[in-house]
Image 1 (cartoon, rainbow, N blue to C red):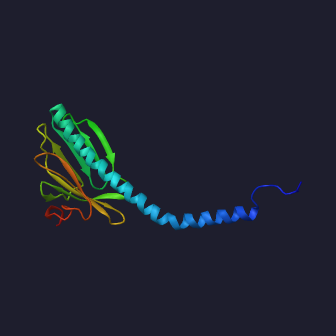
Image 2 (image 1 turned 90 degrees about the horizontal axis):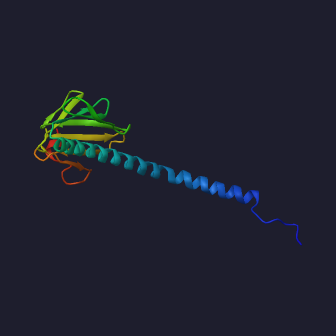
Image 3 (image 1 turned 60 degrees about the vertical axis):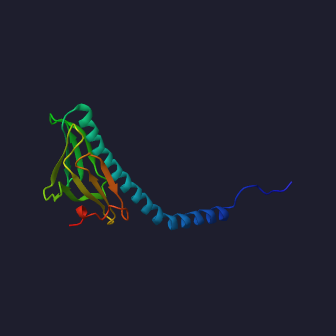
Length: 165
């Protein structure tokens, strides 16, 4: 019988750990960028879903619903006609409402109210949501149908005249 034990030596373990550390350092920046992009896309989709929710709530309850967008706080609150808060959403912390356009006019105030009516219509709103990296998405809610659409960079509609001052 030999006096050798089976297993890994200290040097082998250190070499493997060093290789894993270098691989992690190389992979981290692209992974982080992908994660930021995914979080931003998710935040914009959730924002669009909340606008759609407000429209559906208005039609189902047969009452006017207000959506209050606050630029400085980067949040949105949905209220019923009695002024009760139904839902509140805070935008992803690295994203801001860069621009709000209500019925075709730029909104200079901090607070914008979008009204959804029981017949499905709404006060038309368009917005530019920007990540701190500069990447942006644009959303538009149609005045006649109340439907909300997201426009990503390079997509048809992203450079429509309503978004360009």
